Structures are given as C-alpha cells and as structure tokens.
Length: 388
Image (tube, rainbow, N blue to C red):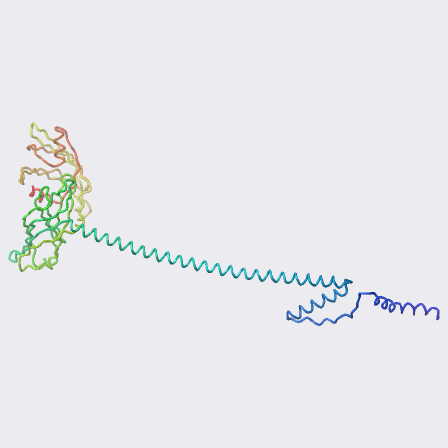
C-alpha cells in the first residue's frame, strides 16, 4: 500500500515544481489576474477598462521590453494621426462653409448694386425719354400754327355765329413745302351740322373771313363744344388734319364779341361712320358730249330697318355750278345690304371735270371705267357742292 501511494505523492507535487521552474525563466514575470470591475457608462471608465485588458494581454505575450515600448509608441502615433486628420477635416469644412457664405453675400451685394444701378439707369432713361417726348410734342404744337376766330351769340334768334378769320404758320403737308388749307367747323356732341371754308391753294397763311351760323338755344349751348379743324386738301386721297381748336361753350362769355388767336393742337382722329361703298361705271363720248353712268352694285350698306336690313335705291344728280340740272334714280332693292343694280343712265354734259375718276374716264374715251367709291353723308356732299 505504501508503495502504491508514493507515485501519487510524486505526481501531486510535480505542478509546484513546474511552477518554480517557470518562475526562474529570465525576463518573464507572472502577475496574478486583475479583477475586472463592471464597466461604467462614462467614456473614461470604458477607456480604462480597454487599457487594462490590453496590458494584461500584453503581459501574457512573451515579448522583450523594447518591442513592447515600440508597439505602444506605434499605437499612440496611429491614434494621434487619426485625431489630427479628423481635426483638420473639421477645420477645413468650417472654412469652406464660411467662404461660401461670404461669396453668397458678395453676390447678393453685387446683384443688389446691379439692380440699383439698373433702376437708376431705367429711371434716368425714362425721364430722358419723357422729356424728349414733351419737347417733341411742344415743338410739334408750335409747328402746327395758329387760328384767328370770332364768337358771338344772337339772343334774339338763338343763333351762334362762328367766324373763321385767318391762320398763320401752318404746318407744310405737301412735298412742295406748302399746304392747301381749309377749315371744318362743327359742334359736339351731335355733329349734325358741319361747315367748311373754301380751300386756299399753296399757302401757309390763308385768309378765310367766313362766318357760319348754328341754331342752338342758349339753354343748350353750355353743353356744346365747338371744334374748328384745319385740313390740308388732297385731290386724290384722304385729307390730312393739320390741327384743331376746341372750345367749351360754357367757358365763353357771350355778353360781347370774342375775337382771339388760338394755337392749333394735334387733331384727334375723327371716327367716321361706315355707310358702305358703291360701284359706278362712267363712259364719255366727246364728239356727242354724252356721259353714261352705270350703277353696278353697292355693298356693306348701313342697316336702316328694324330687322337689320334696308330697301336701298340710288339717286343720281347732275350738278353744274351748284345748280341741279337733272336727277334720276334706280329701282328699289328689298331687304338687302348688298344690292345689285346694273342700271344705265345718260346725260349730255360738257367735257370738264377734275376728279380722278372723271380724269380716268377722259383718258379712255368711249370705254367704260368702273370704280368703287365710299359713300359720304348727305350733308357732307352738299357742303362740297356748295364749296365748289
């Protein structure tokens, strides 16, 4: 039994002897394991625990002291390098954001300056253009000329007497540097009665000395406006308005005769009512002294009936020196604004006429010449016949 127990005792003492042998190895130290405390929530405790674990594991590794120091130095260097990179990146980002803000502020300032300068230039340009327009308008008003007129009211007959005396410094409307002026006189707002002076050829200072009478009750006179428009007569086209004078009757003292000069103002465009057009054919035979007028058709006539239509017919008057020599008329066309006639009429007349259609007819003897003519109000036609 004792012999069997001896090996067991020897085997039980062998671990101690091994421990003593290991403790004698040079350069090695064995420390008892350090108790690890529970980790705290703070960052310092976390770093301390990681450091302790790292050192414990490092002590277990059989490395020389210089290797341990080198490894620690490398670790510290890597950590510092990472921190430095992060720090530099944060600083660069802040500078970039600051620089961007400064650029935006500069751009905003520059844009505001540009807007202010543009506004100043626009205002300056506008004022200059307005000044130029005012100057041009004033110059134009000065160049139109002036008109001498008289006004008188006859309380016995309830008539307004308008005298168109003369004009001076009229604007030249013709290529030759002159004009063929005449004056049209009427009252607004009705325009029922219009008068015209005679045409004075090739002059800018015509003397008219013509008087016109309007039958107007004095009670209604205050609501009227007298218009005197100076026109340049043109034989072959529309007459050009040189300028006009407008007088409100409620501002005129009719206790005495009024005579004064007024500068012509730019004439307002007179809207003429469209009455329609008529197509006529003229044929003249000089040897026989025979004029043939063919009323072909009319179009776009004015609506005169309640239903929006008309029953039109055409009257033809042959006038000479303001006297009616002959008159004829066509048949009546029912319920139409575009009647077709094709009716012929003959007159015996001398070979004298100045209008373009008449001149074209004379240039083409024995040939019918057809042309369209715009219809005019009856009072305008009568005034032109009286003037001629």
